[in-house]
Image (cartoon, rainbow, N blue to C red; front, side, top):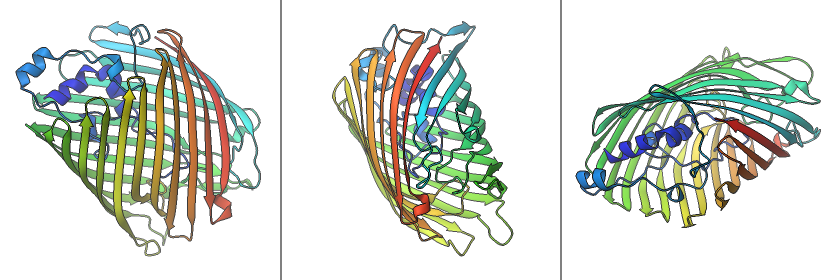
Length: 456
């Protein structure tokens, strides 16, 4: 199974970036602004993400003659040249990579307010430990990390996130693999995010327990996958501007989902796919106001790959989320997704992403939203150890259950300098502007930061 062997060969780096990055921090967008690539077989668990086209030459020739992929033929962001990769600590068939990141950031509008724009600086510290197996078959990949942010003036914004994430794969046969992933975490919803209470001056803490189990099988040119996922949430309390407590326990509960995907390769440069996911959300709610719902999303389209020059996927479909609460009703509509990476040179990757989906402002919120977004980004390898990245996004959000329409404009620019195998330094600037017909939700903010990382 070429795609799976290919993924396993690069598992120490590529699959960790993909699988261990499933849960990201909540931000201002309903559609997350990420350009991270996703390769097989892990698209089986994120079925609406692009899938790599398989290699169709004869299996014996493919296995015997294939040469390792050079760093220059991998995505610029995350590319590792010899001499800059972590050393690691080997113990038997396990490899361990400890790291420590410290940094500082400036936020021009820490409470995401349109009336009182308070600025502050904060210090961050993020220790982490990654452990993965070196087995020829099967594999386990674990990451334990925490992140603490401490503000200079507004200590109410201080927060600590901690999580244990894991992924594993078991080769049942040369053309079948069982994939599993999990996360146990204590996280915080930042002030000003879509799901944070509008008058909160503190982050909203919550505990997350999630797991996914998927079976993926190849049938020549045809690849199929089917799986199930469960996410369990337990929310704490936030504090309002007047000092009162905002209880978020109504959002506690479980979300169950089943998903499946089919890929068929017409040629090494063209394929067809279809994916479907159904969900049931059993949430506590409040007396007389249920926030339970059931829904589904289906998407079908084409995958293209012209060597290392162009890779992408284009699909269309339909989304529906049916709420038990009659004040929200059924949120439904067409859905589309287009994601393209163009590499005019080995030093430059240009990404374009457009998406429409019907979702909720958060997995456990009672408000539905129809989101449309366009994102454009580029990663440029200035030197072997210096990477420049920039992106911009525009999103429109139409809310259900309330008379509200928003537009979000965002930019993100960063530079990363790898000093050697053991240290790196990066700097970034982020800008977010949310404009709403309900002025309470309008704001803009700048964030500028610098991070220093030590790794082994």
